[in-house]
Length: 83
Picture (tube, helix red, strand yellow):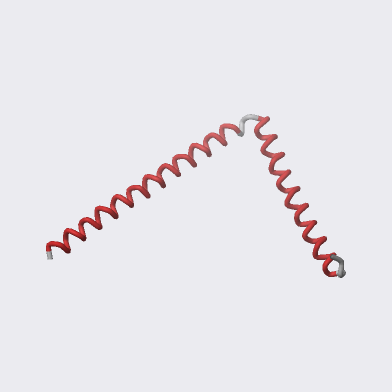
C-alpha cells in the first residue's frame, strides 16, 4: 500500500511540473500577444505605417482575386473540352 502512495504522489508531482510548464508557456504567449497588440496600436498613429499596411492588404486581396480568376478560367476551359 505504501508503494501505491509513493507512485501516486510522484505522478502528481510530475503532473504539477508539466502543468506549470504549460501555464508558463501560455502566460508568455499572452504577454507577447499583448505587447504585439500594443506596438501595432502605437504604430497606427504613423501615417506611413498605415499606408503600407493598407497597401499590403490590397495586394493580398488582388492576389486572391487573381487566383480565383485563374481557377474559374481553368474550370471554363475544362468544361469546354480544352486542356
